[in-house]
Length: 388
Image (cartoon, rainbow, N blue to C red):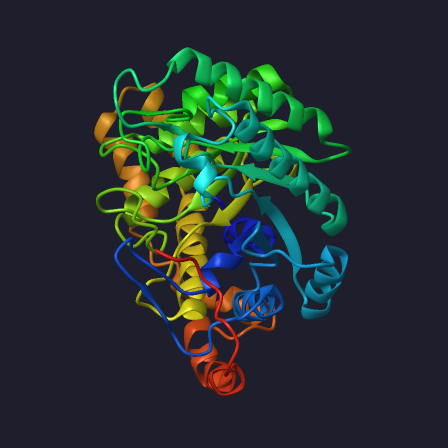
């Protein structure tokens, strides 16, 4: 088993990015639920994200979503983040909330609409330049609802053409990370439905194109940890979008539905070197807090990832390898279960105190009165969120 010191050292370096949209109002396709104190602009979103980092010590960056987080001066926004003790992370494009995109964005049969969508992706790279962001995160809702609606192969050609143009625009250490989703809102075909499709496009683009694994974007029963292991082995795992699902893309707090799955995923991350800085895997949350308070929802999610990671680090790698080599099926499984069943909360509480943080981030935030303050201060204006 890894020494406690080694586990603590690895946990100290783990970083989990939170999404700006998690701090705004959200809901289902039936209703968006408003809450008091919700941010009214990207600057207030960053202030809330800074609270998550302040209480967990592990969330120093914030993903932006364009145009949800559009501002006149992105360099000023980045400077504002720095003053709060956080930084701008991945830039997420949005080519799914415009009437023009009803039949697709970069795969649309209309070249005018394809041009519009690709120009937006290029705009996002400009924003990366201004904010110092490394990653352009792409998710496409593009697809079809009916057999014969469009040419499936032609849509892949259009997708490849747009990705290649945007990839060529990247400079320095910038990366393109491509997300996939097996269905919704397209129901017959989705243009990037699975990790294999994303992997194939990224492989053709080059080294700076990687795959994003969203833990809620798979069919029931999918072995996500296998996908993680494969992509790590190939050097093509760029990032995670952590959330949790019971049925489809529920976007619940990570680990809420199946904490054992989260542990299994993190075991493969540890096994494949995914926690090492050289692999450059970005650990990000992608969640919409519909009924729970926004900031505590993010704090709890960061804690859930930290707990799953701590358990994965406690797996006795030598004992596991010996059992696997000898064909000891039950023994190998027992090694994993011993780590999973370990209560790592005392270890994490002690580590937080060592870092000058409160042992219990949830209780510390509740006692901080920040929630009451923003409810009193954020009166008037338009709350951030997305409509449904």
